Structure formats: structure tokens, C-alpha cells
Length: 373
Image (cartoon, rainbow, N blue to C red; front, side, top):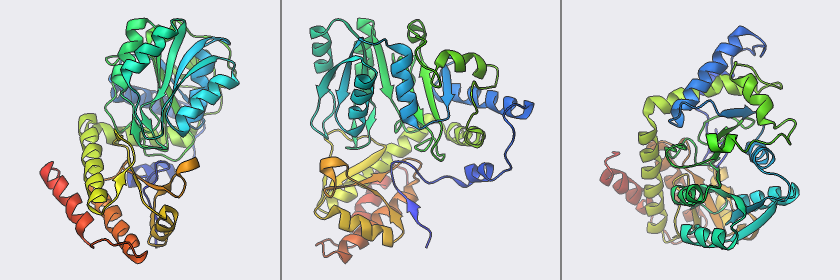
């Protein structure tokens, strides 16, 4: 039985993208690669609705681009506000501490979303803050942070809005220039529909004015000049860049407004299914990238789903054994129906008092009401 991935990274890779990944490797110092890379850059501009050349790709996971943001836009001792509401907010905090910034922590209970008014208050108490570091979609809890409102607060104060969009890029129609985001970070193995190993960092003109030269491998200055010419400072993730051309084309063919509506519809339908089965959605304001819900013996059910050919993700840290995380990134409505149906089977096999078909019915009804079906 072939396992299906409903994990929040890596995600299922579409057939069109797999075909590109299966092609023979090309050398990166050739006209063939240069032409393809420049085409990828043009497609990425369309993804974020910006004509700016201010973005670079790194051969790294998304964490590499997060570290690049710290090193390229802030100096040692700079004060930054870190929104910490989960495992990945904690990662911003650890990166800031490691590189000797002066982080002010906005600590949230896991599952809670940031309050832009509280961000405003904390910045008022710390007027020397140089930026705010946060997630759009906190994958460990499934919580959504209102990035447009947070970015507006930053813009009005003249500080940098630094958004980890690793599980939001390719899900939400993010327009960084229009929405006042100064640094936007993405990762390949999420809704960009690729294997792990490629990250991207977009930055505003205002952020460009703050560029430092503290990094070596993750230097934006080194990379930007090369990448605008279709080359890279270091050996690139060749196959991933070539495959990104295909995955970006797929997203743009569908249209990012429709992509966001699809994810929203599948997420809402999945939550209704989970609730109809008697379980509680964990975050108070969920991201549409994934559904996180609470249930007893979560790991036992998750392992049984794996035996049934469906791989989901469990909880992290104190949520381990308490929640299941089902990704919607790159998931079609039909795929989502499969996940819900097999969840019902796993629950029934583990003696949960659920009515077979109730989750499928709720899921289907939701998609009919939203006119997806």
C-alpha cells in the first residue's frame, strides 16, 4: 500500500513536479540553468504580486532563511519583539538569542493567536525595537497570527515586520508590498509542493536599506547580485529550483485567490468533520494550512492511520499524544475526503464511539455549501 502524506511538511508531490525531479541533472553554471532560474524568479514575482527583485533562494530548509533574516537585517544587541506561540515561535526566540539580539518575548499559550493590540502595547513599552518576528501559520499548534494587522502596526512604527510564511506561502495569497511585510520567508517542502532543501527570502525596499553584511553562506548581498543574473553564490539546489518552476506554474495556473479558497474550504470541511465526530479543534483561530484537533490516545490513532496508509503528524513537546495534525497543503477536496474517511476507520478500530459516515457527511456537506462540490 502506498502511503499518503497529510503531514505539514513534507507534503505529497504532484505528478507534474515529480516528472521534473526525475529528469537528468544539469550543471548550474550553464545557460540552460541560468534561463530556467531567471524564469523561476519571474514566476515567484507573480506569486507574491511584486515586481521587486529583492528576494533570494537558499539551498537550505526554511530555518536557514530564518537565520538569514536575523543575520542580514539586525545587529548584535538590536531589540526585537518575538511572538512565541509554539515550537516555531520558539525557534525565532532561540535564533535571536543565539545571534545575541535582545529579544522581547510576547509569550502566548499554545493554540492562541497574537493580538495586534498587544503587539502595539509591547512596542509602546519598547520603543527601541527594530522589528517583530512571527509566524503567519504556527504549524505546531495550527494557530493563525493576523499578519496583515501585525505588519500594519510595524509599518506605522517604522520597524521591520519579519514573517515566517513557511506553511503559509502557497496557501494564502500573500502580497507583501501591499500588506506591509518587510521580510517574507518560505520553504519548499510545504505548499510549494517540493521535497525539502530550498528556502526563499523576500524583502522590502525598506528592509534593503537595513541590510547588514554579517552572514557568510546566508549572505543576501552575495546571493542577490548573482541570482539576478541567473546564478548563485554557492552550489544551488538544482533539481529543486527546476521543479519549483513547475510547482509555481501550477499554483499560478489555478490562481492564488482560488488556491486560498481551496485551502480554506478543505480546512473548514475538515474541522466540521472532526467536530461532528466529537472532537475539539485545538487552536482558537485556526490556520487554513492544517487542522489540529485534540483526542485521547492520539498517538495510538495516528499509528493506526499509518497502518491504513495515511500519515498525519502528532503533537510536539507537551502536545505529544494529545493532538493530531492533518495538513491541507496541496490537498484537493477529494484527498481531504479520503483523510476524513480513514480517520473514521482508525477511530472505530480503536473503540471510539463514532458513527461511521458522520465525518464524511459533515465534510461533504461543508464543501457543497461552499460550492466546491
